[in-house]
Image (cartoon, rainbow, N blue to C red; front, side):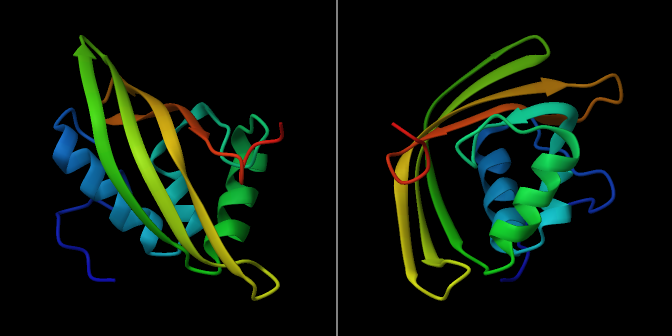
Length: 138
């Protein structure tokens, strides 16, 4: 997938512009590069994407493994609120691809994301909470 927005791959910034933020998130996810994708997250961020709250090295390992099969994410922002250095974003998403065993995979649901602007001015993911029956245990 070609990158169509300007992304600093060493220090990515999700910005406070909701449309641009969503496009950056989609392009980095769809690149299949789990290490690059993890750079969109603060060091102490929690991602519930695996079905369990992961942070740090465990989060990175999950992203690398999951994105290695190059699933395709589509997402539509449903709402966005920015207050100072915090943003709350709601997203409806679908992910299609194959799992590690080569079987077709389709996931869909809603996600609540919290972004924080750091001292360096970059906006990064603080909390990533997708909810779908295919991802989360009941």
